[in-house]
Length: 249
Image (cartoon, rainbow, N blue to C red; front, side, top):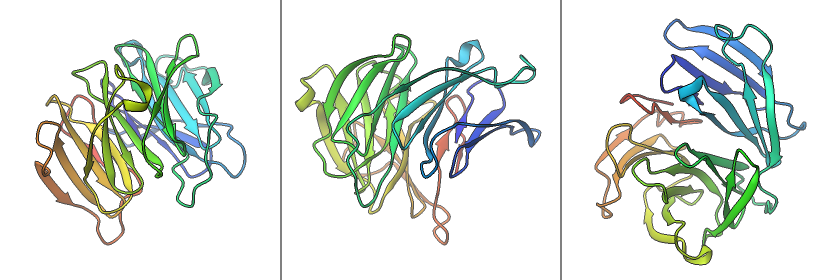
């Protein structure tokens, strides 16, 4: 799932290749289209980028392909959705028993797409030129399940892992030394981690068991706040609105 920061839009994908755009205030479906990833793969990451000029839906599927779509809002353009670009974001996909596929995060200030997942590295991509930059070593045998950039910094981001650990990266350092902090935040699979919409250096994370935690990068010993949600059924998705104190799961 992905919220639009300024419009009342929520973008949702199913477990194959279908993407749906909703007006969440009026509970109205605006668009439905196919991503086109191969049969047997699924959409594993979803974002809306360039939101100040309408927005582009960015998807990543388990085969490593990144796709960018324009004209998803029928109120602005009643024509069909257009795929603006596609490229392979991750080549070194490692077969793992518990797979996250390929996950991404978008740094709006620099136009950089961070790409990780079933891999020993997190890659940086210039989304406009489709040129790869760094290969940052994760120093982990577990899948990267989520990546979130710190809005207050152009170089710092955090990544959640399938073993419940969270790592803080600084890409100004050498690629093999980019991990600067490591913390155990959940006892199970990291579902997602997102920056707090109002507070710098704070992030919300969620596990598949339904635990949601608010963490401060300056307080490494414990979470600021913890919620236990949907423990009877667990969480299959988790997203935080980027300009309002609202999250959905």
